Length: 231
Image (cartoon, rainbow, N blue to C red; front, top):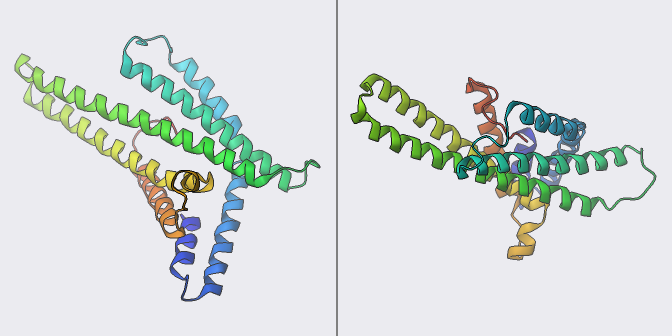
């Protein structure tokens, strides 16, 4: 969150105090580099997540059901995209630390790595939209069962659980949208599609929204494994 706050401050100071604005932007870049150092080993963690999920869940189970199949494919795709994102980021960090003599085009690698992050976020968005659709379907089926002997107390309890689940999915979708502004900017997607770049303010607000939502979810989540596709 501090990283995006410095970026927002840099944007707000443009045209008012350009020197201070540039200093804030330098701080933003330094925090970004520090976060990349913290990501060392993230690609290995992603592999462990894939292996752990394959042991817990049987991919063939209910695979004939389209919503379940979409969830399974989306989850594995997200992990794969994030694996390559973290792997390329790790290579760039290790190279900057002087472990490789070979010269790398860091600008190109950054575009490629953040393209993988963008693909991961878009796939994650499909995952949660599909979960949201399944949530509404379950609620509709439950309302039809009210005439089949289900008690009012049980009905209210289950509806409340589904409503809370939708609220969580809504926050996660907003978090993904916030992250997309950052990922797409570094992948230069706005330049290629719209012939323009997002301004610092938009990217900073997207990052702040994502960070705030993540902090809130971590503070309120009862089941720490609820979100299966974390960056």
